[in-house]
Amino acid sequence: MAHHTFTPTAYHNTIGWQEPVAWVESGDTITTTTVDARGFDIHWQPIAPRGNPMTGPFAVRGLEPGESLLVKILSLTPTRDRGFTTASVAPHCVDPDYVRELPPNDLIYWQIDTDTRTVQLIPPEGVTMPPLVVPLDPMLGCFGVAPARSQFLSTATSGDYGGNMDYRRCRMGAAILFPVHAPGGRFFLGDGHAVQGDGEISGNGVEVPMQVTFQLQRIAGVSIRWPRLIDAEGIATIGNARPLDQATQHATTEMLRCLITEGGLVPAAAHLWLQQTVRYEVGNVFDPAYTMACQLPRAAWPDSLTDSQMIRAVLASQ
Image 1 (tube, helix red, strand yellow):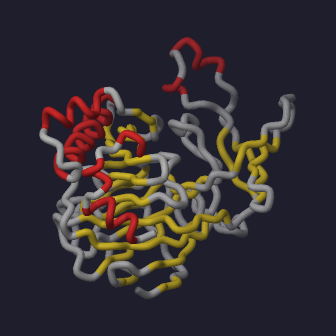
Image 2 (image 1 turned 90 degrees about the vertical axis):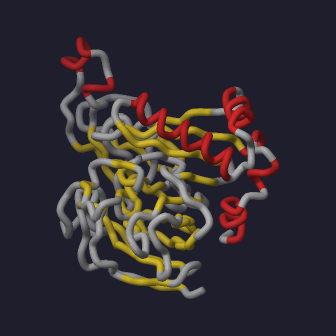
């Protein structure tokens, strides 16, 4: 296994079948950087078009459609000491008769301290409020692989290939499986957040450029339909669609498939197992496709899931 360092010179506002910027072997690690969601770099210089510019794509030799790509986030560090959000919750996240009361949607700035691991709001002029300091919790808002049918899809949205999911568990230590549609997988990443609440209800986390180290691994024996995330908390299957109930359907169906295919349960057992152990977490409720995660906590895993090829591949990458 080799380690690669990649310095991007161009960015993409679509996730698609672009030519890879690098081909690597399964198990290799890569360190690279991203710009923020509006295309600003570490020096606040606009070097990419706004709208979640992506670094990549990176491709794995020998990885073919029908297989899975395992992405392990090894480190995730903000490269700027200040990030931004907008001021207001999105209009569609509140009652219609409350929309007229929303504040002006100006840019708001946050101070990021990687030493104390905190993110502190810089109150806008004229707003009196208590100090707001939250723990630094870096994550990737938008990342994924090339979609099916040679498509190039906007980084504003998401689908079975990943994309703009804004699911806050996509942080350091997480391993994410993606279904592969294109030779090599073609993995993109960007849209770093220093911290984000559930749902990304203002349309942004604390937006900031990142330095990211990740590992790419070919998983030949596991074929999936929707992304799966595995971390210390458990496994989550991720559905992306609008309305939110359709995203929930995708995520729930994928978890049942996981329990049957990787967990070795018969269908009747999978349904009984999931119904009283499941937990749901909302990812994105701002963008064209919403994100819902169907989570099975580690304490609720059947032993057969722990011993599956999928889990063994994740543990082997740690």
